[in-house]
Length: 144
Image (tube, rainbow, N blue to C red; front, top):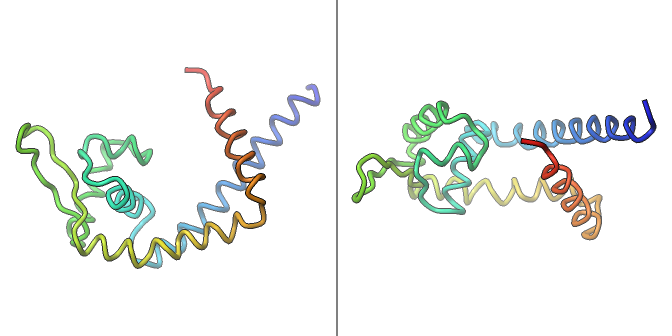
């Protein structure tokens, strides 16, 4: 195997390990707040992007569509979101963040953001931009 192939494998391993370590670090904090990472992702989406059709949430947070109902049910029981029927099309139901859900995100998100920044602060702004560009470039090169 050529050196370029070895480098590709090494990059894959390094990216995978870094991603796993960062996720474990952030997920531990999120779970201590009383929600799982998927519930947090749904709330964060609704907080930043507004009401979302249930059918589209999975694609936006990379979750299988079958799991969305379960996650939405759990968040509804906690009082963090509610389902709202679309007045124009009864087949569409929106997830809407409640005041309680908004207060929860507003109490947790700043620390979540700070913790991510503390991990990434070892990189300069230019290094972050370069990493973003390079990782996007690799991600867009995946064949269909």
